[in-house]
Length: 296
Ligand code: GLU
Image (cartoon, rainbow, N blue to C red; front, side):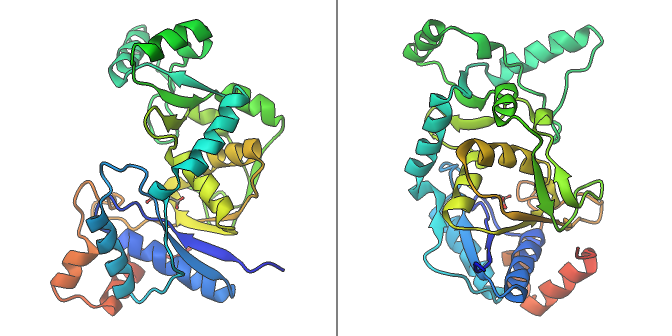
């Protein structure tokens, strides 16, 4: 019987809020109940938005909450070689392609399509599916654009990836999806289209680095917010393509604000640091979390 491994994986691109406190504390509690290990991982591949100062703030908040985790903390920005190796395997298998359309070009393409009255498909996060026309570009055309210095992202050719995997993918969910999905959940990666797997300058994306790290760190139990439930379908495809083990998943409630919206760093929702500065104690935080969530 292997020892269960749990992890809390924040992105140090802002300050932690109550939603993060809930996720981190739930992870630690589940690890304790399972007699498992608890890791913290810094998901800082976005090196422009993630800073050492924000990382220090994240660790300070977690320690203040009373959390203890194994050292050293894995910092994704120190492991680009691992993601590069995984990306190279997908490139060699011809399952990713350099996608050159800029955001503006994608918008224009979709507007043109929707002007005809038909709605362009959206992914589970509500973003338009990538048009994917450059999937069929010749290698000479691609090389010419790369030589010109055109920006591009490596995108997974989702239809080919699904065909390559060749069967239905499932995962074991002990929490719940947005529609109450639980137990053996069938992945629907086709709903995502050609997701970004890496960028020209950075050989990683959230989807790629999260599956590589969960495997490298031996994570057996992924406990995270329900907003990432649908992303698990992409993670299952990548695990299958890269021959990685499949953890158990537990997607938990999100902490909502008074208007019923999920908390966000970008909207500047009340941070743990601000609550602490105004005199709140870790017990107050635990009470606030308990009050606004029906903990799954
Ligand atoms: N880094 C992600 C976030 O801060 C979480 C990733 C995960 O738990 O899989 O939202």
